[in-house]
Amino acid sequence: MAGEVKTYDSMDVTTIVDGVFLTGYGEDLVTVAKDEEQFTTAVGAQGDVVRNKVNNPLGTITVTLQRTSPQVPYLDGLANSGKLVPVSVIFSGTPKETNIATQAYLKKPADREYGSEAGDKSYEFQCLDLSMN
Image 1: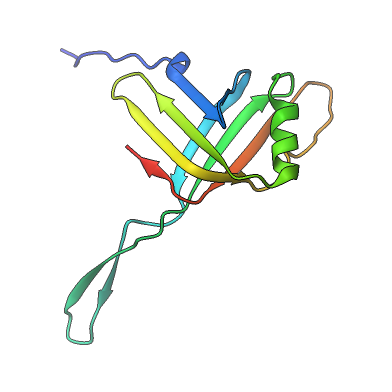
Image 2: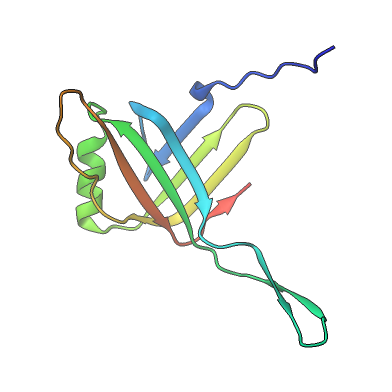
């Protein structure tokens, strides 16, 4: 007999940038990643192993919005300003996940692509203090 079936719902994802709730997500919604591993290892000449804690708080949050999202002009303006803002990505499904950066900035405005269909726009936040809980 198969195990219990779980359900994922993309409606459980919320992204908030400086108090503004993002809407009109693209297909990929959002990705949250630390920029570096939590630990590294070093091996000495005689085989002794040392595990080193990496204290790098940097991370990246990438948000994908549809071209028609009402927040596209806001994010493009934010990217051009270089302003530091808080960013939160919350998944309220099971298990609940909270990703918070109190200081983040957009690396650049979204690329602009024009074709026969409206494409998505990707925004990459450099997080200076990313916490993933």
